[in-house]
Every structure is written in structure tokens, then in C-alpha cells.
Amino acid sequence: MKLVTYRINHAPSSLGFIEGNIIIDAEKLGHLKKSPLPNNMLDFIDLGEHGVKQATQLVNTATEEELLECSVPISNATILAPIPKPRKNIFGIGLNYTEHVAESARSLDTSKELPQQPVIFSKPTTAVTGTNTNIIHNQKVTQQLDYEVELAVILGKGGKNIAKENALDYVYGYTVINDISARDCRRAGQWIVSKGQDTFAPMGPVLVTKDEIADPHNLNLSLTVNGVEKQNSNTKFMLFNINDLIHDLSTVFTLETGDIIATGTPAGVGAGRNPQEFMWPGDVVEATVEGIGTLKNTIVDSESL
Image 1 (cartoon, helix red, strand yellow):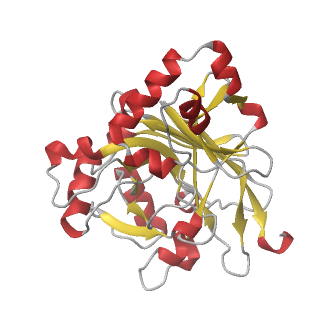
Image 2 (cartoon, rainbow, N blue to C red):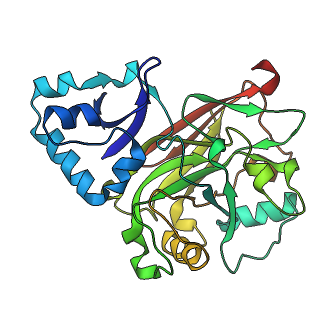
Image 3 (cartoon, helix red, strand yellow):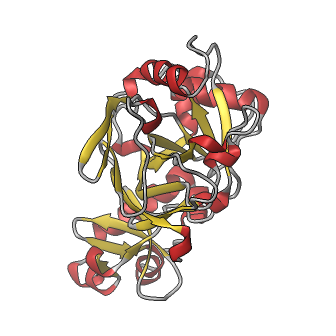
């Protein structure tokens, strides 16, 4: 299923299922079919595969009249981040594509050697925003605002010391994340100030359940700025794949339902170009992952807000 968190005008946000050009409201459909469904993404994820099966059955058995009663055109909705307020920080993975390791070594003073274990950082929940929203550029803080298209993994159950061979069993679904980075805000090698500022974790436009992604390790991902392609690669080139990442994270952290893992970006970031290219107010950045969709955001000056 393609799941979405959306809002109509100024009403509270709701959970929906995308079918063609419409959004089917989960709570309204459940009420109509006398089979209750939650109205927010995290509560729905908590239901696991049972919730997906229940919702799929309700959608498939609904009449045209019933669907009309509990749906709205996508064009009438404001699409929010799939999980607008995660329960905890997003796990970020750095230097997870070979060519990105090389370009970072040239421009960001990181090691040219391939990492021997995943490079982990985090992004606060306050960094999350959705598609068609603004990314805030505070020019008093940074002059090096950069982009990073990434596949994000959402966990459907938690655990500790998860075996690599079982790791994908813990995945609920996938979305797109743009790991916005202020390259000149790193502090003593720490990245959270660089990557954790408000609006620096745009996600979306939808959450796709794992049953719709045949192979998460063979997805094209790309990014454009003002329509010009800057990144183009495939998740098969990850140094540490999703199994590796879930296993490694679970050896040091207790993973929980709803956790988000941003799996790293390929080469082509602005800092790695010659000359370097950074984003400025007015720029439009679009991040795309095959099978999920395109996440679109506009850079705005913090002084204009």
C-alpha cells in the first residue's frame, strides 16, 4: 500500500491510502465498514502486517459509493511527511556509497578509506518536514547548504541484536528522505548541527509498505536542483545494505517500531563538485526513489519568514 499523512485545509491531519488519484481516509473507511482503523501513521504501523491486510481488504471490498464517501482527490489535499513527528531521532548513515566516500575525502576532510562499520549520526524530530514545503536557509549560520537523496527505512517492529539474515523481517516500509546538510556547521567532527537544523529532514511524499518493493537493494535514486540532475545512482551500490544497518544499529541501540533509518547518499552532492555548488533561496530541489515517488522542496531565507 501507499500510505500518506494528509490534511484538508486547516483540519487535523489524517492517515490515508492512495488509490490512483484519490486518498481514501483510513478512519472514515474503517467506520463505514465497521472495522476500525487508526487515523495516524504511527498507530497504523503499530498494527503491523495485520493492519495492512485489514486495510487492503476494506479497500478491495468497498463499493464505489463507499469509496466516494470517504475519499478526496489528491489535488485537494496537503501532503505532510508520512510520520510528521517521529517518536525519536532519525538514524542517519554517512559515507555509505563508495564514490561518495571519495568525494567527501576530497572536499570534507573525511577519510578516503572505506568505513569498516556504518557511520551513524542522528537528526532530531524537529527537522522533519514534508513534500512541497520550505527548507529554511539561515545564512547567519551556514553558507554551504547541501542536498542528499536517500532511501529511508521505517521499522515495523523493534528488537535488539537482530541477525542480518532476519533484518528485513523488521522493515515496515520505505520513503524518500533528503538529508539536508550545512557543510560548514560540523563541530569537532560531529554532524548533528550540520544535519539536524529545522526542516533539514524532508520526507515523503508517501510511505510504501515493503510488500510493494520487490528488492530495496535495487532501486534507482536521483536528485535535481532547479531541474538539473545532480545525483543518479542505485541502492545496490550501498557499502552496508539494509540488513547490515539494522543488525549494526541493533547491537548498540534498542530499535523500536516506527524507527526511521536514512540509509546514506550516493555521489554528486554539492560539496563534492568542482567548483562546489550549494543551495540558495529560490532553489527547488527534487529527490526521487524508484517505486516511491518524488519529494519536492523550495529553499527559503530564514529572514523572509
